[in-house]
Length: 370
View 1 (cartoon, rainbow, N blue to C red):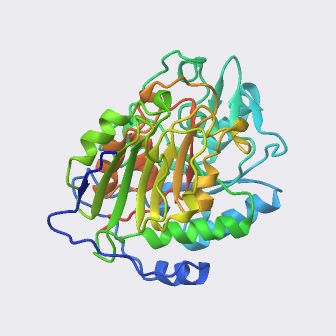
View 2 (tube, rainbow, N blue to C red; view 1 turned 120 degrees about the horizontal axis):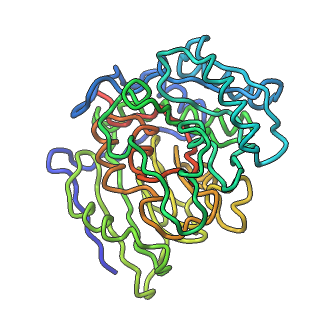
């Protein structure tokens, strides 16, 4: 099994010693770094003033999660938008969604560049094809973004962009779903995201990245990019490429410390909770229905990464086939993240054709914030 490990030439591996309970994460978050600046960017990264928090009015969990997020991140009152929508089903029709989006757009302050959804149902917009709700919030529902099965879909102008103001520059507002339905789980995730700010840039920790070419051949098509990225040096990140394409070793990364990136391709990824995750970690698995919440349609849903300790993930909501453009590109994700982008910015910029997928997690986490 091939393995390459490349510590940064300027930063020696530094293990993070922060405690994991919610109280400790909140304490750490209270003194986290992050002044909105970063290297190699075209302006400040997204911050609370540029993020709108969307609330399912009357849904007790959504209301509680929104309040917790607003307090933790200091989101302005004007950016908290309450909307009426049914939360009992996993799908919303394209017609109903168009009405919903028009109402939201009319109320959003012009300074808002991105949105956070504080509900998990509905997570899919269904018309003649199925589009994930976070992409539909960004682009509007359109069949160009969700052509069925193995067809290619429209490319995002935000892909690999250096823009820090996507609505101002590109007329889109990338969106992320927090991903949890209970306030307790959501509050832990929120605290984890806040605790990530400045963690790597300040030298308080060095993260590890695990890029896995698994034995599931059809789901491991991202491996050329994995291998190329693993040969590079990234400040504050130790790169690891594992090649189990022959099936003679293990597909799982287990009992590892300070995991900040974990990308693989499997229907179900075993023992992910055995790892020690750094705040701000991004993790996903290339499979058909990872973003099909809440069940995963028989596959591991992306929310399992969050429960294990990751801060954000991505998965598709309808059969995408294994077209790599429909899934995060590791090299772009890491490049944009280490440049000082938020997790929402870096993840969104890593997917060229995101119409069939769903982004979940805490959007403003910035381990490389300076």
